[in-house]
Length: 510
Image 1: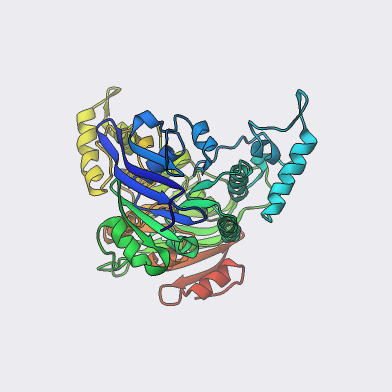
Image 2: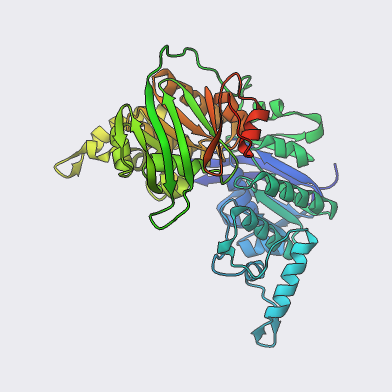
């Protein structure tokens, strides 16, 4: 192998009594795309924070080398000076500033004592044109979608002439078109001799662009594979320590003559009382006990708005009726929905699902905390005895119930959100992108849990952008396009071609 441009050797990192990295070694060669794969909690995020100087040199054991020479990064600036740029999953952009200002933030071109705004705009426009990205560099960052913000972060890293760019889940919130643009940029960077370390749970992307793949598991580097000489099954086996033969486990039994638990009739919903054009129009469907009803559609189709409205958290209902097990819901908010037996696992767990600076136990019991409050005082013994079995059955990777939920991996945070919902003992469970940003092992755990819920006679409404997941887990699929239903299919007729046609606005039937 060519001498590495960068090497991390024997990296050990502890947080109190928890070992996050237990001897990781990683080589990066100039001009390669090197993917890091592993379950949530495997140590990927901790490793890239070390490479990026967020965790300084004296906070971990082991050694970093650049061009064969030892380096000690005591800050992010040290890492950047060495030629490393990290594009984190949580973007670090200033919404009120323009695209150009964000690209040059901290390194603005000047003319004498003043910022040279004309030169800044010209150079920013030239950078984006170089990578064939059509964007208005004078636009405020806050006016852009997530996909374009991600591209701005990458261009900012390229402006610094970084030799190594680390991309942490860069496509998690991108549309297919934006993903294609990003992957083309990664290919272009490789041709220019730039090294890319690419972290992603999407194995199809990993195999599309990678030269080598390193798998982390439980804080250890398990294996480094030549991407052309391996396959997804081998990567998954190394990630989870076991072979996963059936990614979408089938239900063992089905309920005969299932009862309708959620009924939606002629729903029409606008953003608020002042918005004239409804966002959702003429939507009717049932969800039955023991089944998974999948909700498909492209980005912007109205899937999230639909489940948020059903839960009472979005929109002004113009017409229509919603009932849970025969009890009518008038859109009186989440508390009324939970009282009727319906819960929502939100798409944005960090914004809507969790209090990140609180403990696992606090978050799991939050929706039902009144059960354990007597005369204004919470009985912590009763609370913990109720949530401990769920904590164990969900296999949350945390030291204990007192662990800060913000320190957990994305997959384990998702399990906490699901646990919080299940403590409400619901009849209908709304799952909005429940596997977004989590690894294949955690996905299988979620799929098994969905099957467990339907086996118990609950109705599950599953929103998913991943077509294999939608088809693999759903008993029926409802497809939305621009806020209206364009297709409904049973399992036998829900082919990828039919679902995609309906998602693109071609109205079709079962």
